[in-house]
Length: 180
Length: 141
Image (cartoon, rainbow over all chains, first blue to last red; front, top):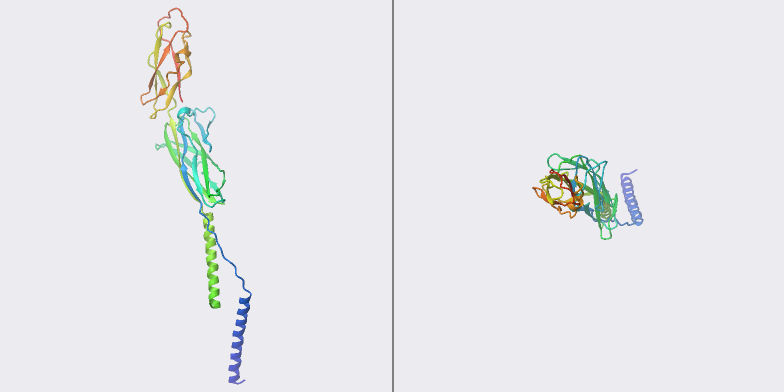
């Protein structure tokens, strides 16, 4: 085979290859389809405290008890032989906590409340009381309105000890919400 | 635009789409929390009651008993004389003594003094000199 022929053969092969690539590219271009990529950024969920959880004023003697406040602001005192009482005319405005939740309209969200043993309140002088049995309305799942808002009420049960030392007890608790 | 350019644009769009979707997912999963305050006030167990004066020695007389109620409360809860009220001497009408619940009032830091008037419910022989006992119950209201 002569050198000239070899060069010609090589050029032909290269040209053929380029042509095939071109054909292939043409073929690929001809069968392509277009899809739209989209994403929707929703309003982030947010929660803000509207009012605090207040058990009010309580009197207690030798036997403690449990003081529950419902999400409807109803106080219930229980316990065997309890001497815990709440002055009717001077109850100290007991009330459930209220939170405002905002986010994407119509979305549902999960509610996480403190577990038992996680929250205590103190008088600042080493005397404490446990706050357990957190409840909420809505319960475990809430739904944001058409305006993207919801009201979340939280109640709990205060454990008053025997001969609980008089004083003002305070503490804090967290409520967490997240989209389902 | 060249073929390579188109491919590059599509690849870039694809990657951007993935990033946006990932951001959206992060937004959906992100939880938000808020903190509220919890409070309760424990009052003193009950108002303490002490008798300042006792009933007059003779039941046929009309007298006044001062009942002094004190509390260690720093606040000022209201208290009232609560029924039942009883007296050891049956000639004294206990209901009359506190029928008006005149003891309603507010405890201050030093307590409260309420007047309890005793009147005989019947006329009888003069009682021997002595001291009658009046039991007064108070409670928060």
